[in-house]
Length: 463
Image 1: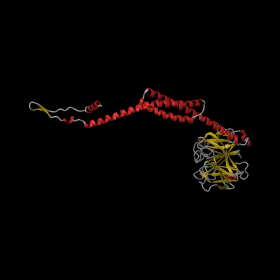
Image 2 (image 1 turned 45 degrees about the vertical axis):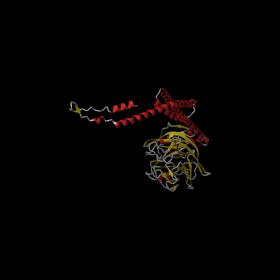
Image 3 (image 1 turned 30 degrees about the vertical axis):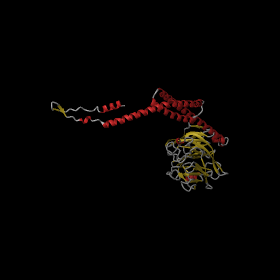
Image 4 (image 1 turned 120 degrees about the horizontal axis):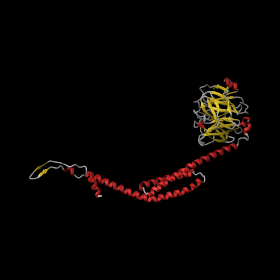
């Protein structure tokens, strides 16, 4: 320690310079005057160097303790690593047998990550052949676990897809009437083959400025009271909400905009019974639509003015502009689309549980107990925001996409009778403006109704 101190002191005075002065003769002797302040003992530097020596000595002691502790920990960490490798063996076996242990592997991955941190700490301190070998083995094992997780994630997705298919098959077999395609001769011919140019083109009775809503012919074939009536449902509040529906007794009345009756099914645009989005359909003596800011479908009875509702099934049902139709321009708040066809009523929507893909639920009105129910649900693989609109025909859901300002295209079909899909369709659908607020099919006359930026368009369907 003394030698180190002297060395530091000498080095601290190495920058000193020699002094030259003039002498004179005095009593047969040479006398000169020296400035001796430069030879004063450097007390302050000595104190600083002494403190540095103590600090260095403490650091050396701490390092020695850490190395001793790390050397003692090394066998323990090696033992933990060996135990982890043993724990991984059952998962290797399960993985090789095609079993799915995604959650367990994730937990093991967390344990391995912490163990690898401990190994890296010891390796940085000791840096010997043992720690280097252990660090490389841990890194190799981590890659192995990550690979297993990746493969099993893919396997899990495959299983989920198989479960979705089985669920769809179950729903198909559950309650749809046998040979429901036989209820209508057109359904026996399979999918739609063509759609005509517009056979009706009229500005909405609420004006071109009312760019969103829905319209059509009463869709229940056996209905008596409103058999030939037509309806228009405008969204007058921000083109998102509404609370009235206009009814015309005949097609001629609709075209002449005369002899209509307005029904108010909610006291305001923000009432729980108000309509949200262009989703309505008149079926029999009732209007069905998406209830205001909810995952519910409402049924408004035109005769009794009563409103009944049912909540759609699924995890995280999209509403309030969560999953609107959105292929080109998003159609605001078009999350829940109510449709009708030869087999009855349907709701088309998306859920978080189905990753934002379209879900199809069948709706049934129980007239005896006065309740609206969901009897079946199918999950498709078609992302709802990749669709401009959709409709139902003979138990088959058809989806459209934007082509240009004057054309849509039917490109996808999902058959609830078989659970099969067809994404090879390319059926043109002409329009007069860009935005399609709603599309609905009517089984009584095989026509499709489009609300197109304030225009009312109708098309003939061919099978």
